[in-house]
Length: 106
Image 1 (spheres, helix red, strand yellow):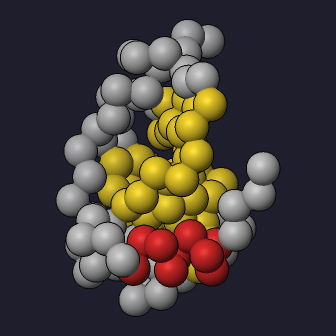
Image 2 (tube, helix red, strand yellow; image 1 turned 90 degrees about the vertical axis):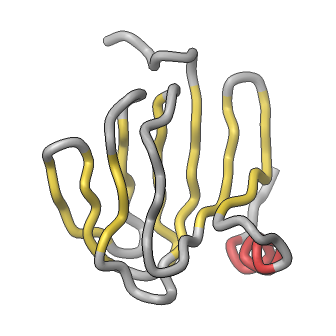
Image 3 (tube, one colour; image 1 turned 180 degrees about the horizontal axis):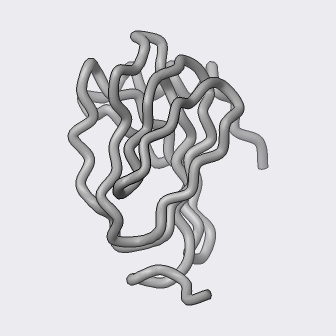
């Protein structure tokens, strides 16, 4: 299975939503996400990983703020408030959800 960022962004451009699910297998889902100017996410019920495709900015993960750039890997445990902020216009990211509701236990 291969997901190409360019093709995924073209599919997303035909949607009215900033995200699009592209793959699902068991508890794993992969989406592409490209918000316009503001990230309106709320906490999710499963663990989540972002792999940045393009753009840069800041990421607020609970109480921790960090910068991000293409290729960066960001992990968010289930239930944690998080959002992208001050991001460039070309920002896009893979979103990977996995595991059980409530997140995996250590």
